Amino acid sequence: MSTFQAPKGTYDLLPPRSATFLAVREAISGPLRNSGYGYVETPGFENVELFSRGVGESTDIVSKEMYTLTTKGGDQLALRPEGTASVLRAALQGNLHKAGLLPVKLWYSGSYYRYERQQAGRYRHFSQVGAEAIGSEDPALDAELIILADQAYRTLGLRNFRVLLNSLGDKECRPVYREALQTFLRGLDLDAETVRRAEINPLRVLDDKREEVQKQLVGAPMLRDYLCDACKAYHEEVRALVTAAGVAFEDDEKLVRGLDYYTRTTFEFVHDGLGSQSAVGGGGRYDGLSEMIGGPSLPSVGWALGVDRTVLALEAEGVTLDIPAATSVFGVALGEEARRVLFGKVTELRRAGIAADFAFGGKGLKGAMKDANRSGARFAAVLGERDLAEGVVQLKDMQSGEQGPVALTDLVDVLRSRLA
Ligand code: AMP
Image 1: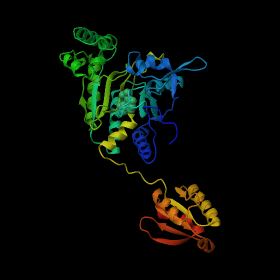
Image 2 (image 1 turned 90 degrees about the horizontal axis):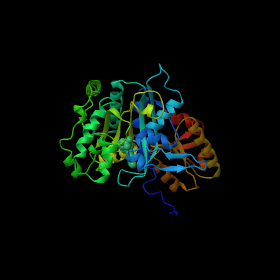
Image 3 (image 1 turned 180 degrees about the horizontal axis):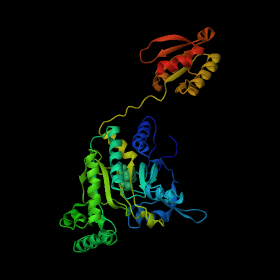
Image 4 (image 1 turned 60 degrees about the vertical axis):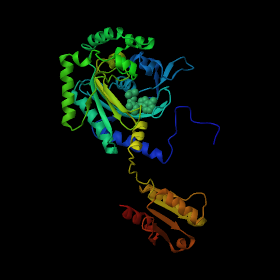
């Protein structure tokens, strides 16, 4: 072991488990790539203000969990704690939002950083795949995103997840509700920190998991009763479209999410096998965010699904993904000249698009065949000195154990057809 360990709250992705992470990223992004979403990649850090203005000063993410730094040039930067603000910034900066091109549909995959208290399923460095549909107020987009996330989870074989759905209203009706909720909260017996939160962001108090708080919230005014007609109609349309797609969801009036930018639709995907960190993904509509970061009005909707927790959910359900062996052919050579020739053949196979690996390190036949086995390759190509003299290579089918000579010059063609 080296002197160094991965920093607290982080972990390394190593084979073979890392293959599952790749497959999860692939499975989540597949439905997006198939639905008109283009790939976007943004820097791992941004100006701190993008997040404090976008995500919100009052949120835990910004006030407690952000990794901030001052560069030698004096810039205040933050490691990105989430994807939406960066992607919207990039779309605005790149002028993707010209009239006639809306909505701009983008997907991304990357690392995010939050200085959180470490526990199972909660890390300081984690990985998300996300999607944003920017610049249209269309309930079908909200529905599309919920349906695509459901499809991704189902493709992976997950079953024990639920979709929670809510509407947070808009700039017309939410302030009225906020006022009513605040008045209600002022009459409760809450600790100083919660009283402070009630003043800055009263909706977050609804999300408080502590029983002594939840007990007092019985009878609190509910947003549902304050939604304006436009928000109500919008929400009903989202619900109808999701229902028509056969995706079951639960109405959850307390779902407010931990970011300030959400308006109208909010949703979360929770998995029942994960204990307290049960959210595997979440998202919603953020009609005001563009203006909050200095852009034009661009009503938008998006989600981010956590890759780490999706892998934990798969493990909790005992689902193992069918990940094909990375290597199809494994070359084993005995003797210097055979080694040179077979290494050349392996290169040829690779250039022909056949996944091939080679016994490195000058091992003997036994050790090299062990490597071949471990690689999961379908075929081992064994070249000894006598084979070389005869211009053949012994091709062994690792599944059936059958073995026979193939002319060296035919190796690529034979393997191509036998692997087809
Ligand atoms: P959020 O936008 O905070 O709801 O995050 C979206 C998803 O990212 C969550 O549902 C989690 O799956 C994942 N996620 C967020 N924070 C963490 C974390 N600290 N560790 C692992 N996964 C996380």
